Length: 157
Image (tube, rainbow, N blue to C red):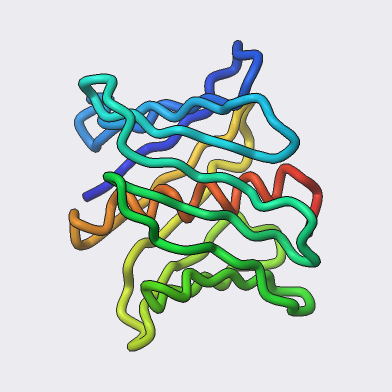
């Protein structure tokens, strides 16, 4: 499954539209006011299906995630040099990217590809392509990308 992730240019809060390869909206992401990054994800029927919330007062960025009422733990940024690394321990997923985090892969503990992510560099808003071979991983992969993007926007490179 391929998803196209585009930030809305005119919005008071971070908000994004997520499209499938046919251009149909499959998710909408809305930012919420708070001391940290907080996002709610809605399906095409406008039902809230997931949340990403940055934990505050942590040494390195951490984001708690829930989907369909289930807690999937936290996405943690690891202490590394030059190449950022994030992991979702509960699923055994890790992400390592280039120094600018424009292109990266999310893989499981067996190094099996969960998602291939690339960012459009020249754009007025954040735009990503997310290629998820197994459709059942699409929502969690999207939450992972939202957390990494929020961390990058915070200037934590």
